[in-house]
Length: 196
Image 1 (tube, rainbow, N blue to C red):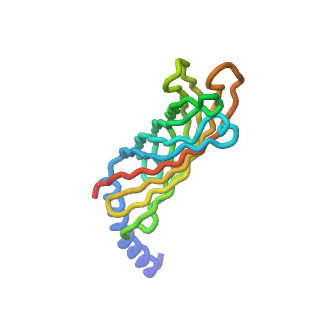
Image 2: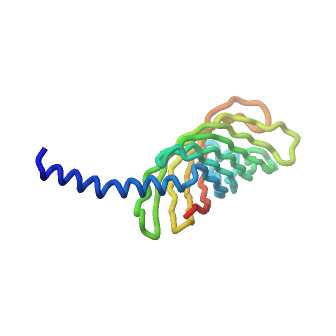
Image 3: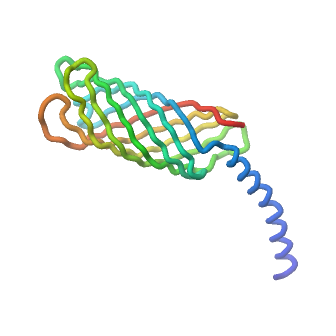
């Protein structure tokens, strides 16, 4: 090893070590748990549009950050919809509950006033359809999703934007019939605060 390469290696270690320590310290200060209460809309697509109406949706998301690039997220959502296949179009509560994994990219534009961190995820769970005022048993089906989104940060405030593409089993809501696969999109946004 020449003196020049030794000097270059020492200089690189001198520059990188404080940056690595600062990054580790900033991750240590961050909580591993994230709580978010997003709101948005459920948009039926394909054959699902003939069964249920678009509905406003509220959710609660709890994430555990395994490491900065990976999180496990549990979501419980409630959409207010209607059964458009029935003549009276009765009100319908659509409940979604699932658990998934998120791959998170490092924050872009870090160190400035505004940051952006994209993510993608997959997960599985269930969906329930329950009439509000009809004496009909709720229907429960398996659900899976793929998600993309990002989190915009301004100082301590984080705005999370997310789109999920759900594929669910679906049985007719009122009466007999064969089950099939259906599809819908869920678009959500939510604010959260982070520690300094």
